[in-house]
Length: 320
Length: 320
Image (cartoon, rainbow over all chains, first blue to last red; front, side, top):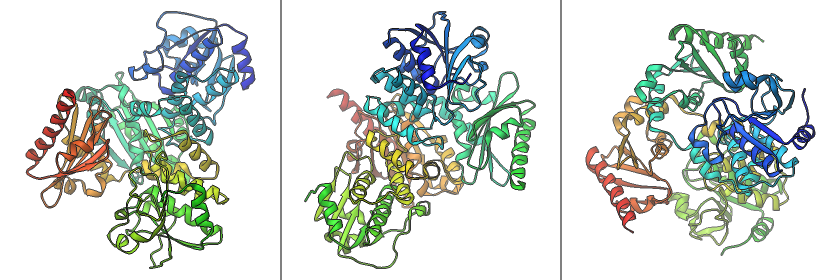
């Protein structure tokens, strides 16, 4: 059931103990949501913990620590989690069918929770969480401001992407006013690369191929590249932004080899190409400018399959 | 003479014909200031043109076109120009001593103009121009919004740097509300790399060496790399940001070989290392976080010279 802000706040006010769940492979937005909401609920005299099926990268530790004890509460809240599957295998099995409230900004939300507070116009789920926290009447502390700012900044590529709205910018201004350490956060998130990442980026650039008259740039990351660079899959996300940046490219693809032999595809597009529609042809999905899917085969057949779907989309787009 | 906002607006209201000058090698902020102010003055029934000693890069053309006719008006306004020298050689000689109003955000402004409206807390000079335009009572059109947004975005690395304040973010939100095409502008300014740039970046990453226990990352760009990548010196500036981004690095250096056999050094530092002091040891200078100098010798002796100066600075810093 889709609910509105007031109904979500009612639910939070009428209950006392909350288990907040982030999505697996947690990022700045889901963790920012979790820790900000947790602090807000605690300041209302409630019990709350934030848990995740995975461990959180160390760089996010300034926002808070995930609860590693096996604590369960009935009032399960999922933040920035569009699908119960995204809780991760274990957590999906344990909690997936029992989520009471989901707060999310993905238009593709599967509505798996009992109640869903959904705003697809929000650039980051943290925008919705900030509205919830304000409606709870909670003061925005420095830590809440750091958390919300992190979500706003990381889900917009530091306010660079098309999903940014005036609300995003006004909220970021408010968070800086409330003490968010914006410069430090942006250095950690956007101006810090590990040596292994730089080595992987170099191999990724070497692998880049151009297709479809330069409209598609394609990076392939193999398991061998992880070995040669000392890097791993956790560092690929930043690389996914690179191919779309090449002049003339409308579809940028980063395809990474998984240990099970399949390939995970991350697609980034410019206006005019709906990445979620292209990825849907291959059983995936996502947002209009950023989507993903999984393909099988060897490197070449997998790459050709993805390129042929992009070609088909571009041709149909011309014909319509 | 330093003046306040009201005095600047009085000057604009009391006169009819304005020659607006940007700094040479014009960037998004100085051009955004120029074109926004020009449109605002015209909508008040005034005559105004924007001129620059250099031509403007094509990517800024959506904001407007520089006047290429040799038009002169007595009321000369310099925007984002900290020093008459920065008008460029010709324009300094012609106009440098006759600037009636300078609107600027550089704390280092030389106060060369008759009247100066200065706000060093502004991340971009466009923040001050927007306040001037509002005080003139002019409506913020889409084009003015595009111009002001461009200045805000380009002078802050797309809202990433420490100079961003809540005012910057609120103004960016307002400009989006007034129709600024933020996503298109950010793509042009921050998400577009030429293929030759990408090829040069790859060679630059291959050249990167680490020194001083990983505190210094050093990229060397040779003339041969320009030949191999098809790129040229105009594309090196973006590369200069890379070495400082490596985890643990406090001094990032990019050294480029010039055609006369000397090397131009661009140094970027994190807090705690004053790049302008290190570069001063080699006859150069600049800002605390970004400075430069020129060194001679072959690649290895030039690199060793720069590294030894950084080592000396870091040691003295420890001893003090």
